[in-house]
Image 1 (cartoon, protein in one colour):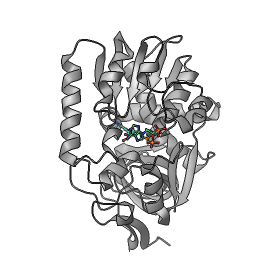
Image 2 (cartoon, helix red, strand yellow):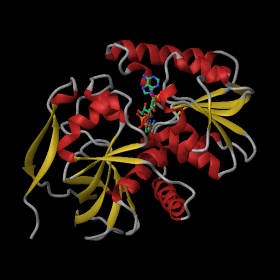
Image 3 (cartoon, rainbow, N blue to C red):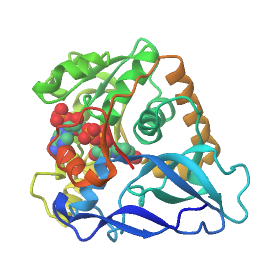
Image 4 (cartoon, helix red, strand yellow):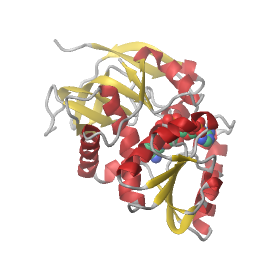
Length: 326
Ligand SMILES: NC(=O)c1ccc[n+]([C@@H]2O[C@H](COP(=O)([O-])OP(=O)(O)OC[C@H]3O[C@@H](n4cnc5c(N)ncnc54)[C@H](OP(=O)(O)O)[C@@H]3O)[C@@H](O)[C@H]2O)c1
């Protein structure tokens, strides 16, 4: 029999981790072009934290949660290529912290049966973002070196593993306490971007704002800085408008100053531009997982502990990908 009620974690207002409340809700019916997924694993993204803090542009969603892994339980009208019972991953953007999630079919990719759901979930956002930036944007050649800021984190550790599998050397930054984690992913730890011995072919920068200028100085003139986040704003006491102004000013300065190219990357726009490419990237990543070329580090917590998950992520206590299990 189909489920009629589901558990979800609602974002009641912008604020601290305690604004997340567990509640029951009727299971939605999938609209045309969507599928209903019963969740096996729901990722907690850094973006969820800045949304909860009220730092992101746009309206607050009812339910946070960018990425999920689960099984299709109902296919909406007009959907082809997916069937009930099939294991899938979805990049829903919002709504993931729930036992049931409706996903537009062009944000859904097939997944294999074998691997652990939380490990597959790490592929859906962190590794996919890393793969797009590494293989489709920066495209460093084997034998070159790159710099990864926050290399102990979810996307940072994914970038290090993907680079190593491609024969590219990695310098990685982190807070001093997490140096061994950076090194465990095959990177050479550096205290900050200024400590890189020679300019790198590409720098992957999730800190943003004032960090972009330092990243460009660490990068070769003909190289590229890929900017994909603004972690600097979290915990620094900036208002939303203050963070946006600092972000925009740093991007404008980097675009106007001679030196390496600056590219802004978001996983969402890359997926929207090329749905077949998105599914091919997910398939390539599951292949690398099976071959042992990548090994996501995951931490799991029960769905009902979403507030605790946010507390840990905000306090920089999480290594790898944090995943909620319903
Ligand atoms: N553009 C996209 O499509 C996309 C997709 C996914 C993620 N992202 C962004 O990528 C970033 C990383 O995400 P994630 O899931 O990998 O997060 P994560 O696991 O929390 O890793 C972030 C890393 O950044 C460092 N960090 C945290 N706060 C910082 C701060 N205020 N200043 C400098 N460094 C800080 C931390 O390293 P240490 O504490 O060791 O220094 C941490 O390891 C986030 O900004 C997220 O929004 C963007």
